[in-house]
Image (cartoon, rainbow, N blue to C red):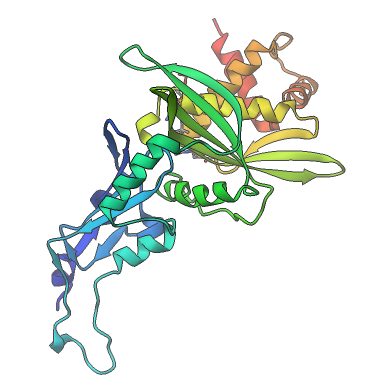
Length: 325
Ligand code: ACO
């Protein structure tokens, strides 16, 4: 077989993967941002024609249904293999997905539909509700959202986290799975709450993980690690709401001296800058700030609002620039 024969059998895995969140009313479909954590740097699967990977999730419990289809699968010809060269085989796409997805993922559609029905009746978010807020939708309706604080001490949540963590591989650059045996992790989830007759149904929107680092002698530095809003819910204010909620929880804790972020990307930094700037303005952080800004004032602000030194300077700069005539 020649190289060009082989390239005919290579498929871009980011383009051929589709994700969907299924509710009783509809399915919101979206594409992964990247798939290299699963399929390697080149994001290709070898050995298929018209490969299609579709992963559907129940909107509440995030149970997944996987379907993989193709119109042809590569079969090594007998003549191309010799005794000491093993034949080229098609990539084991189901096996690769299995390695990263929750063990309760199904390929049985009937089972998936049954879980959907159960979800409607009985799925409830885990953990402690720490905040709720409304977001106005495009058609003018108010949507109700709740934020929950969860921990790996809760076995049910551990199981839930094994389902939702798959999204970080597809949407957060350079991310990897966190250690679920470490019970110090704090996880904050957002759910949409919908009235359903006398009861309510809940739909997963996004989440964030944070880790409390010990800071000598008796303080804590909170580090936001993974932060994700699912694509169907992005740019509606949920990221800002989640960030502001956890920031306010962390800063109210006496032991927390600083809130940091692990490898923020550009869109997270934009969101964070806007939120921090607003928070400082609302809390009169800039009342005594004028050029030139003495180091003492920066350190005072940093300490009071528990921001990093860099982020405090960044906010002061944005404030001064926005007040230029
Ligand atoms: N560029 C400029 N501004 C932005 C961007 C952006 N890409 N994204 C959000 N903003 C601004 C919004 O304009 C908004 O400003 P406003 O309050 O003045 O209107 C503010 O930030 C909040 O926007 P939200 O609608 O709340 O943002 P969203 O819910 O989409 O969440 C997030 C933003 C978290 C980046 C989301 O898009 C996401 O999950 N993306 C994919 C995963 C990701 O990149 N996660 C962050 C990785 S870094 C980390 O995990 C630490």
